[in-house]
Length: 279
View 1 (cartoon, rainbow, N blue to C red):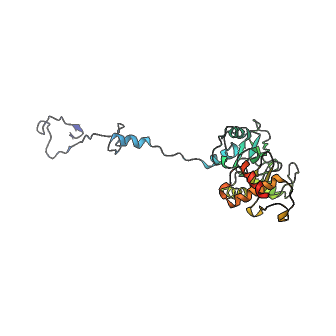
View 2: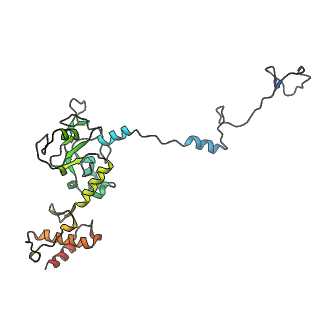
């Protein structure tokens, strides 16, 4: 208690303190608790107090930084892009060295492991370094327009020659040949790099429609749809050109009637069974 700003002794009485009539006595309360910093935490226990400060809010990812990282680093190792580089049919960019190591160790993560089985599923690309850059090969650009390869502009890779050119340059110079090396290309040879979700979805559907069945070595039979699979031979009015290709086509016909066989590599027993069918 205090009177006129003067603290009263706890053992004193009103008469002994000399308090005059009609004086105002102030009563001050001392409350226990608080966080030790002079303030109240409104916490019911120490555990609640610790939990309140231990939980950290997730940090917001800068979209510009995320976009730049996607265009300047390898999609597999997340290391800076360094030639030689390759891309897949969906437009993801890789360092060739990191991808080869992943293929040899069979450690490719999903979804890359679902459609990348070897280097034949990849396309080598040629990135043009920014002229006058202090560290050569650290930044790349379009060799025609000079637009930097950082996600601010759309880029295409030509699958036949591997040159990476901005969409602006291809649109301005309407031609069916590469502007850099003058090699002819078609519309399907243009692969959009780091495209939108809709563009990636279209690329996936296009890739699924093209089935590649390998019969060993570098030879194989490419089939677009199941309707194109026909038996070959004189019985069907088709000349026999290649017995190996004929057996593979018959195996594809079996896959058409037995979908469970799709995705499996043809075995010797399958070839023997198809060969008996041709007899």
